[in-house]
Image 1 (cartoon, rainbow, N blue to C red):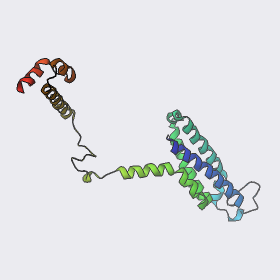
Image 2 (tube, rainbow, N blue to C red; image 1 turned 120 degrees about the vertical axis):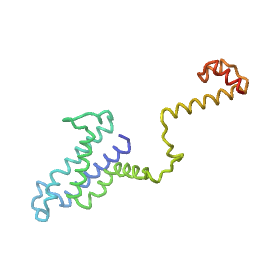
Image 3 (cartoon, rainbow, N blue to C red; image 1 turned 180 degrees about the vertical axis):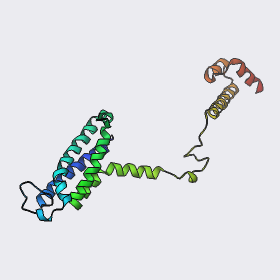
Image 4 (spheres, one colour; image 1 turned 180 degrees about the horizontal axis):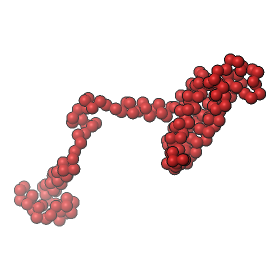
Length: 193
């Protein structure tokens, strides 16, 4: 996991925790000792988010931090599920529950948490080019060659090197070492000159 990915996600979790604290203080989320406060105006979303959101922020924070500091944990499995998939599930559920519970206050932490996903999605969409728009002999997208064509091109290049060295009066053994051709083949090339 790249540095900016786990770093921004952990910062997003910290911002989410701060947002939860702000919503608790403001009265948008339910506290155990503050049942008489804003309880009548709270909906089911806020009541569920009151009990789930803050622990989910903490759990996601520590898992992302674990993967960021110990990258070999990415391939580890818990109950036959990769840790990175668990983190993605927690991350997306954190964003959904946060927006449902805290509303507009959780938008910025959500964007920070999802920043790496947004960047990777933008990179994928900008790198794609429709197949009908790609020219056949484009320098950006070279035409795919088969193994036989590659070997033929290699032989042509070796011949050009051998002919160039023969024109410069190089030793036949030296040319044979460089190109891998037999001495007889190089002598035949020299006769053709």
